[in-house]
Image 1: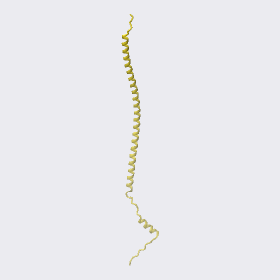
Image 2 (image 1 turned 90 degrees about the vertical axis):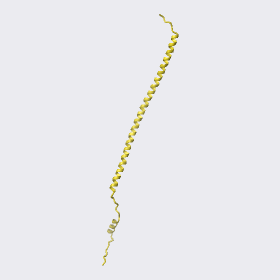
Image 3 (image 1 turned 180 degrees about the horizontal axis):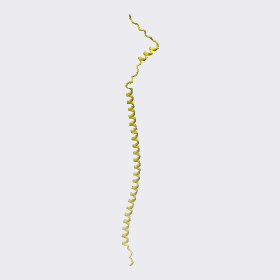
Length: 116
């Protein structure tokens, strides 16, 4: 005698079949993927922070360089003015010396008689 299998086809059994047939996504490596993603984002954020810090350092260095340039340019202009003044003074002194020698020569030629 052959056995006859009776199969129920109601909603519950159909839902059970559907659940068994649907493939559940495997999440074996999900934790590893999350850890790798966290590391990647943290590394990129760290590099951004470092680049931001170096940018601020460069801005500060640039400001210091500008201040030094301004102070040095002021010193140079002051020294130029002093050197121009010194040059004009030496030229004037040289002229006075030359003129004084000429005046002495002229007075020696035309000296007045001295009264004793």
